[in-house]
Length: 118
Image 1: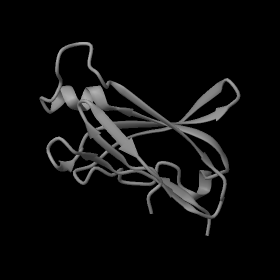
Image 2: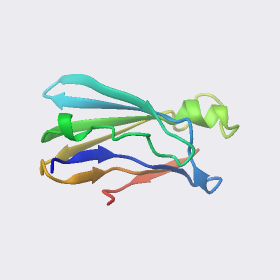
Image 3: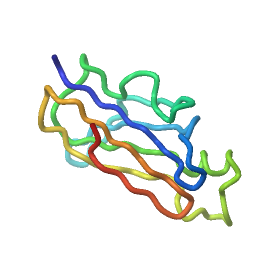
């Protein structure tokens, strides 16, 4: 079985999944950055399908971009402009072509954290 990539976004300020948050995935190669996918989180804060499905999964360097500012404005958590957090990029490497990589985001208007989940 080939690997795949997923995410889950939780809004820690309100203790709920972050639904309707736009997420983009880029493959990195040197200074090159190629858009592979753009999805939106569902009511559970997850995408309806893997961001990088088995058929497209490959080792390499990637960047997930979470459009947090759009989400925070929509749900009424945005503070003064410019926002402290607007676009949240997370760069990571995929080294095992058979593994499930899960990159969650815990988000609030003034902070975020991530980790390699399961």
